[in-house]
Image (cartoon, rainbow, N blue to C red; front, top):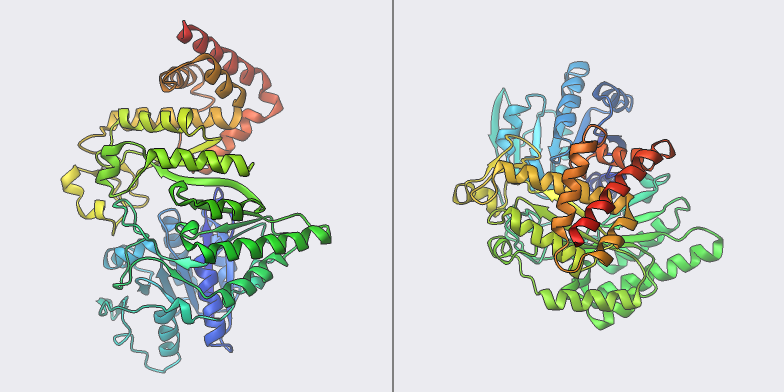
Length: 501
């Protein structure tokens, strides 16, 4: 009866976790309801996506809409309505959650939007549809159309009690996938002003955990998928679970050991965390874990930007715990940072880069351009920081009081090329480390400018979390481009040498 569409960018891969969770919940609550999930990439042809969805012969289509797939989801919705006028199109997810009326008015083919966690409202909507004269007015947290009028129902404290949920995640839906996203908890303990993770339709704050007697069987089911290569844990900060987290680590280690004895490859685990929460006990729990890389959600090391973002940062503890982590685990450190944050400056962004490169000594880094996300505290105080942003998703910043349009272009150029260097010219990062004592970022700036001026047609700056960036890396690593790669490296080393003098 209902088909969920997972539409993700190629750089993300995997199936959208939200639609898998909704499908699993409906299977448990309405076992006779026909449900399925079909997976697509944002770059796929909308006509092809709609064709596959229609082939399921269902009349209800559910989409989880994010900043990266809104445009594709909108085009697909239009085709579905054209081909099957009587179908019902339901949207949920972060984008419509905080801009429900605006989104549904701009997308006339969308029938209904669920704001906030979707399990309870979606079940009620499905139940109401089975009535001859469905009436959604009594279901909270909805925005829907009725006789061409947009109606918003009451926003209530509709809490999905995770601790009482014992239905199992539908592992059959991810068979054949190499990467699977999975959560053991929801919510965030922090209130960072650039984020909407901790913002809820309800009054519920902080982190809520699924019961372990649900999580453990689900992990067993996932680790029984022979072809699975990576498990991406989407919990906001996995280390805050303490004893619970240690138990989950132990279970995953045992399950990977069983895979090893079968002759299967071990599943790598990936999750984001704050090193400041890394206790000695947690370090011991991480020892045997098969980790792809340790993702550090640093975002910024600029005290002014961190204060504005309501984000605590203890530099000494950060570095001390990273040092301990390196001593017991061999997996690389990947630092995530944001440029263009309100109250930050281009110079502040460079200081963050210097911290990542010289003090944190990250093995890799990802630089994101700040997005003014609807629902976040910064979004609600855009005038305070004079934030100018794109009119629609992903709402990238265009300028602010402290980050001019020109500064953003400079930050984009620097972040693009420094990430190219870290992914393609690893020997260059070591060379810079040996030759340059003190701040290294001015040297990276000079190299970035040289790359842009001499090789800009070959490698034009772009966002790192865009598929074209992945293509650029592959292009540089292609043996056919070995000569140009060597010339770039030689020119960069020359800049390092003259900078040392």
